[in-house]
Image (tube, rainbow, N blue to C red; front, side):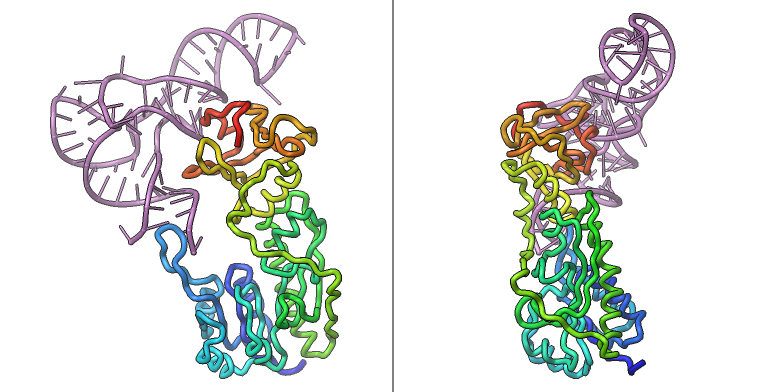
Length: 312
RNA sequence: CGCGGGGUGGAGCAGUCCGGUAGCUCGCAAGGCUCAUAACCUUGAGGUCCCGGGUUCAAAUCCCGGCCCCGCAA
């Protein structure tokens, strides 16, 4: 075994925090952590620390949270940590060349897809939207072009038929953590030969925006159902009913036949809450009206005066 | 002090603006109908209307304070 590396970890949300915890249990030394600045969030707009910051502080590790990654003082501090490698997991910023080249071993990134497929900010939702049966995790070296660097290791993960963004994330995070440790060990041992990505196979998974959750009833029921899963828990799929926001937490395709106009309620009784789409009928199985709890369709129908023929 | 909605029998809701014997859809119990049923009919049990003050002859409803939940936003 060679000497432990000095590692700087950059990341922000919960999956990154879990990966950091795994890294802390490994043989290498995390000498510093970089995360997004604390921001007001949640009801009441309280300032909230990122999950990664919390893990770092709990372990007594120095934390930097620069507003700008090009801030000279930040770069100087980073340099003073003298990392052998920088590990990046969902940090949330594009890194400048000065950081990519700062450590001798460069930046090691954990990406939640089988690159070159699904490059970009939201590989998990897009894999579900597209109905993939297999996705996975890739470790690679960061280069200036987004998620286009040479691949170190990959591992496949099968998607369940009812996979949601939340459940897939839960599957991928431990795989990614394990793959990261394996990658670092492999690099130290000189056992990994980076493999260039096939640019012709590249596809992109752009950032999901709140607005993307709005249901377009012209789409086929099967597509809407996948979007419901892909956007769970965020931003979730939603529509409007009686002028109010109605979130759809769970849905299923009950028919592929055309019936009624897109968005029309074609059934609202003990048998279910069904909506016509551009192709087929979608059953809304679990919904949530604004200001209210999420409810199974049967519960929702007890209190809501909703009838066939209404349009969403 | 970011904006807003809500807490009503076991569940989901209406009623609150315009105080005056607590209602709807279900569930539950008993009986009936039926070959049968998650169907249908009849009857019934079950509520401190979140908590604490105040106003009033009278408060779920108005006023003040508190606790909890939720949507937006981030």
